[in-house]
Length: 268
Image (cartoon, rainbow, N blue to C red):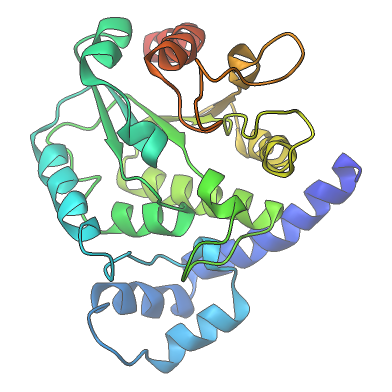
């Protein structure tokens, strides 16, 4: 598939995303998200789900026993946070060791991750308190979308353009709430042991579109995934035992590769 076709597809999906973000459907969908404990969905939310990809519709994972308490904990963490640099994402972000994170990026660093989250879940989190910082961060790193590549019970897989559209919706929501913060999209980390793995290819194609979301003014993009690979393109178990989540050694490589970019953006 050519980049022209990919970006053409993305443009169509992002057009829907823009409509969603600014239109009446979005307002109703947010209202529905706040009333997620109700069994019956209102008509507008049903229309939104019929028209828009699931990746851009903010929804909580409130049917899962431990998800809401984890979210609430992050809301309280944000209210106390004065960190200059914050990381948002899924299990890869949640798995970041605080000591290791602060050792490499400095003491004014925090991570906000919930394992299993997709772009739509992060969007809901953003709209429900996780951006209510005591002091707005200077830079936010977002690593999100890898879980959208696969189907899980209750959550269908998203297409490549839909994942990019979901990340775009996340960024736009964060920009709206944090007008003085810069944003760094971190390309999806490589998956699957071998280079021709389905999820590896999916992550690579997603990154091609995520790169296009950067305006290099407030939104930036970096891909450090190749630093986690062996010379033959495989992933070593000592770096990612399940070929998805880094070990401490994997995080060390990841953080070291990322630091020059975060340092540069924090100085701007």
